[in-house]
Image 1 (spheres, rainbow over the protein chains, first blue to last red):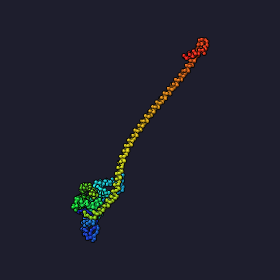
Image 2: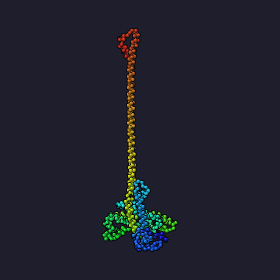
Image 3: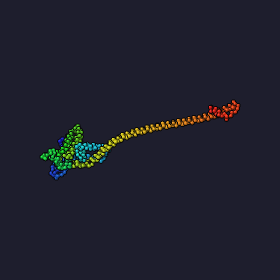
Image 4: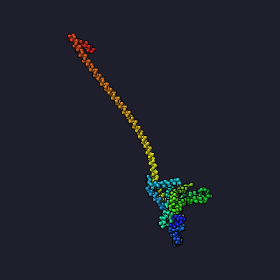
Length: 289
Length: 156
C-alpha cells in the first residue's frame, strides 16, 4: 500500500477503487517506481493513483461503491423476498419477526409523513431505509480489514462504505428528486406544478421571477441536502475511524469501541432521517394547493 | 470524492431495488400481516361472542333448573294430595265396610234372638201347660185356653 505517512494513509483510505477512461497521451505515473508511461490511445483502466482517478473525470465508475451497494441491495432483497415467500399469517418465526418489525417501523414513518394515497411510497421508503442502513453498517467493519484483502488481490484502493462516497448518496437522492418531479407533475399537472413554482410564496405576478428562483433553489436543495447530510455524517465518521486506526494497535480499542457503539446509533439515525425526509418531500409533491 | 458515472449507476440500482421491492417484497408481507391482524381481530371478537354465549347459556341453564324444580315441586304436591286422597278414600271404604259388617252382625244377632225367644216362648208355653196339667191333673183343652196361653207366652 502506498501509505507511508499518516496523511497518505488517510488519503489512501478515502480513495475509491476507480475504473475509468484515460485520454490518449495521458502520462501515467507508477506509484511505486515513479516511472512515467504515456498512453498511446484512450482506454478504460483502474486508476492507480488518486490523480489518475481525478483525471478520469466523469467517465469513471467507483467499482467498490457500486459493488458493495448492489451487494447490500441484493442482500436486502434476498432476505426480504425469502421471508415474503414464506410469510405466514400465523405465528411468525424469528426472521419474519425482524422483517415485520422493520415493516411496521417504515409503515409508521410513512403514516406520519405521507398524507396522500400512493402504494409505491411505503415500499420505496422500506428500500431506502434498509438499503441505506445496510450500506452504513458496513462501516462497523474495521477500516483496514477488507481493503487489506483487496490489496492482497491486487486492488490498490478499496473503500467499502458506499455512503461515504458522494456518488452513492447522490445516486439515491437523485432518484428521490426525479420522483418528486414526477409526482408533482402527475398530481398537479405540468401547469399546476409550474404555477406552484411561480406563485409561492408570494402570490403576485410581479414576483414570479423571484418566486421561481426561490422555489427552484428550494426544490434543488432537497436532493442536495439529503445526499450531503448522509454523506457528511458517514464520511466524517469514517475519517475518525481511520484516524483511530493510525494509533498504536493496543490503544485503538479504547476509542474504536465507543465510536463504533455510537455509530450503531448514527447508522440507524441517518437511514431514518434520509427515509423520513424523502417521504416528507414526496408527500409535499402530492399536495395540491 | 470525484463525481462520476457511479452516480448514475447508483441511481439505476436504486430504481431497480425499489421496483423489486414494490413488486415482490412489499405485497406478500403486508398481506400476511394484514391477514394476521384480521385473524387476531376475528379471534378476539369470537372470544367476546363466546363469553357472551356462555353467559346466556348459564342464564338459560339456571332458568331451566328453576323451572324443573318448580315442576318437581308441583308434581310432589300433586302426588302428596293424591296419596292423601287415596288414603282418605280407603279409610272411608274401610269404615263403611266395617259399619256394614257390624250392621249385618247386629241384624243376625237380632234375628237369632227373636228366633230364640220364639222357640223359648213355645217351650215355655208347652212347659206351662204341662205344669198346669200336672197341677190340675186334668188335661187342659189347649184349644180352649190357647188364647190365654198365647197371652202368657207374649208376656214372656
